[in-house]
View (tube, rainbow, N blue to C red):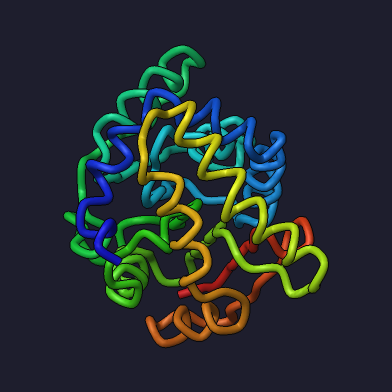
Length: 227
């Protein structure tokens, strides 16, 4: 998908409206998904949050008390600037770095945990990104991924398709004034793997004990695995 080659620029363009629009379009369910994701995490001293964006997951991790320190990487400086401001307002410390998830600037076995919320489907090479997550994770550490998925129920899938194909791109275009970003979101979700197929990618990257938990009729899914 061509947009994946310029994903940082795409999210820079919509960074100013990203948080508000996301919460509105999901009816704030995305907040519940992140809190559930944190509950599924194992306690960890230092976590790498891949595709940290505006730091919603990083903030949820730190506020939970299960995580002591977070380093976040992203290709969008605009998103990270907003995340840094939110963290400062709440007195939370996150180290933000501009870095590619497929070529991370970290030594092997650096982090106690690795997370990624709604970022894996934006990797231009998924397996390389997952192998990098495995490389920088310490033995015994857990990877936790929250990602959109595709509902299996026929009725829910029909409503989902209508919303993602028609309403969401239109609302996103009007509010963000970007003609392509929310059309890309729809296409990226439909073309991405989910469920057991994504777990297999985790296993192929070297992880073990992969597990997935669908949320809200399968609209999103939490994946966990260990090194």
